[in-house]
Image (tube, rainbow, N blue to C red; front, top):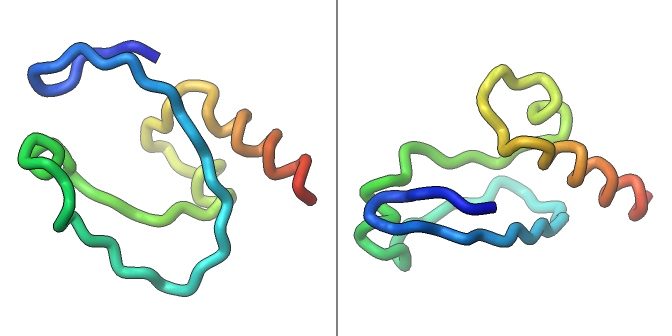
Length: 73
């Protein structure tokens, strides 16, 4: 995927990891200044939440995640 972000042209490759966790605190302590300045929010998503959201989720990525999860179950 290629896109512009902040002052950069980005070529990005996605990796997905499946982990089961309890409530976990998120810290931005190790992010670069530009990452902090351009991060609006964060959250942990359940698969049901991803299916039901009206928010923008990267194109076609939900299908990729579901396909990978189906292989594990």
